[in-house]
Length: 458
Image (cartoon, rainbow, N blue to C red; front, side):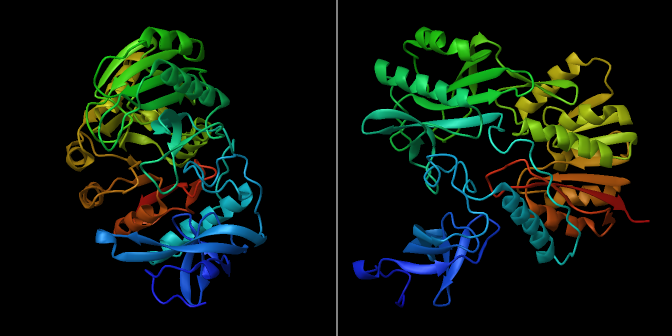
């Protein structure tokens, strides 16, 4: 069979094709080739011989980019490491990508991902084997469950893979905890019984938008956030009574914007604590409902230990993108003075409370963007820790680092591609000390955290 054009509709007799999966790309998508053309195979495993139904996906501005994709209809012969997925929703829900792949093979893929990211920037570096997560399942400490509607009934779950407008109702999920599914089931039943309407992201009508659950894996705490549109919350006392046995805190988070966000601009405490506490490496961190915290508490312990081991210590530490103070507090006893740089108001608030908890700590929070505050640190740093979001370091931040010239930079990254790009730029003044150290914070997904130590060239 020949494809005459990406836009051509296949006839029924030509619906299925047979391909062998070659590899998985940097986005976690398997691919094969058919008649010399690349076809992306959803949930394929390298070495799979599969029968797929091909179709066209239009991407880019005005849909001008056309990609050939295939849904697996039959696995003729499995690739190495293919296993039966644990969850019944796998392949429909977008929460996991690799549940059908043995964990050790996930880690092999992630190591290759890091190696190839650096090679694209002309660097042939040593990459250690990724540090496995202590838990392959039930490791997440936060899940944001969108609320939707199917056949006029409310549903709560996760977005369908590749869709932003369809919610898959979850009957099970192996990412966070069994209790989290029980909680969303209780809320869904309450909504159905009391006629509480889900928020419609198209018409911007309705009320209930998200249920956000955060868990302190080491404190045993659980915070439930009910995210709604603006308006009265009928039968709220009844819902609190239903949920309070499952939580140490319940809040009402009001999002007045049409933007599809799982956080609100107004928070009303309803029951118990209005925040979460999590304990990492001897420190109990106050976490505001809207503040970021590392998603895998079990592996965060190992991440902090690794950063402590790499940091040389000295007079001044600057912790850029410091958040609630995870690295600032964990490394404070290795330095005379610590400066945390943070712009997010909720993280700053949390860090302030953590400072009050641990009075006398040698930590100062500098409020503002890294681009502005790096040049305003009161003292020249011996060590700078950067833990940026996925886009990595801005050009201005890299320029500041090259100007400040600290003795060492500890770079914590959740994106190997932007890490490699930034290391290549910083190599003007810095050398990579030892191997890149991947640490798997996200089992069952294509994502991988990495830590590197850069030392100033003499």
